[in-house]
Length: 319
Image 1 (spheres, rainbow, N blue to C red):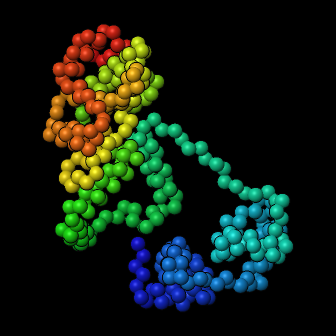
Image 2 (image 1 turned 180 degrees about the vertical axis):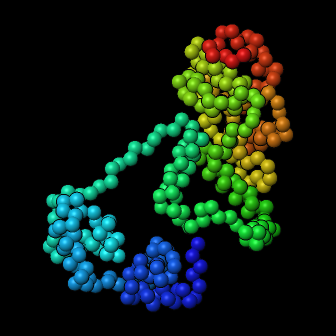
């Protein structure tokens, strides 16, 4: 974040009349984007710089000799300290731009398909590290750490913010953060070191992450019921229910399964081998905030009954 103090703003406005954006950025020690953004916020409209005879000579040379048919306007604009639009406009006015020439275009990259959120994040991390190796860290902080003094300042500011934030403000902030996590698929991350055989499974032609063997077996059971025509459809974790206005504790609930019955009725199923206080709170709040939603809890006894009756009949049942 650029600290725009009074002296720096004064120099910015003064230099904007006679210097280019990249020259101003170099003189002030900031990025060119920061210069453009600040001038726009100040309402200062920078006048177009006049083209010198030397610049026009380089422009003609680039179009006629240096780049031949494969003219790279971006490289030329960078060398001249101009924008691509300014270079293109000037070349057109000088009558040296050939609209029929071959354009240099970057090849379109296909977005890779990822099997999981973890795989996507690993790919992004790999690309980011490679970009830093080639171009350097954008803020020059690679390999650096905050000093004890800086950490103390950050801690003090964080404490002051926490002391001044009301319960309503904190609830809104947490609620918004959780909604963002839900959109990104990171609201309910897998638990590291879990012993109930969490992992990815292909059930019903869909690859999903199941948080326990019980959950996976229930998915196999629902797929079996669908094949028999006992139910129309089912989905694993398709919808998150939100509890707006909650100041403390859980403000959302993601049931394990959605089930569509043959008569068109919808219900949500939760597989719970054990019920902690947070789970009890979610179920109570679900009844309060979404009373029209039918929630069926498959506890230890219910799961045991299903297992005893169908484990030898359901394909893929994990023992």
